[in-house]
Image (tube, rainbow, N blue to C red):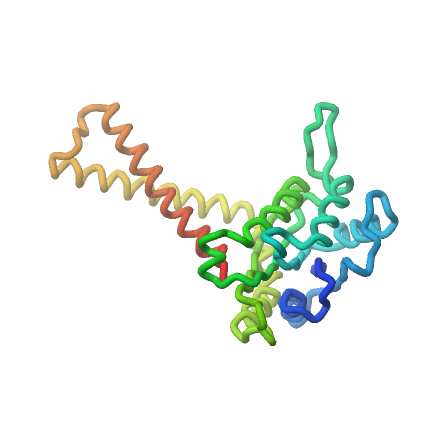
Length: 253
């Protein structure tokens, strides 16, 4: 049975970030998954310290790690940053040339949760919480772990309780974790989806070329002109698709 490990990178066990983490774990638990919640401030997280090795062992036992840390002063919370720094010696292996290679955490999945005082609009414009996501991604990606979700709560100043819609979002994320993780394991299906996306995009671009040719705006008899037009149109179309997907998956609100 899958195990989901929740880690709170905050001293406030009753804060909004903690509540979001609890909702994710509640959903996962109701879905029949094994869950565990750890508070980083209850451990002495130092380089080569026994507590750090205990935390690493917990990560090894889990299929998915949910790291929740508020965004303070435009960066990930200090306690979470310290954890990520101390995890480095376990998460990656260093070659003779100084290159980093994934360690035993390779293939595990992770979710990042954060919150900030800024409004949703301010967060979108300034990318405030991006620093938190990037800090987690830098370490976990180097360790070979795969992201499967993000949750952001903005405008937390004087917010007395977790908004209902955010509570439902976190709970539903936990409820669907098993299916999400299983989909991530289905590489063949993902390659098939990628093939059809590229095939459809190519067909659409070729249709656009034919339309431009009929309007007298493109000479299809010249190989290099047609190739250049195809490359530009295909790149533009693919960029729009990828941007749309990225914005949809990374909602900063």
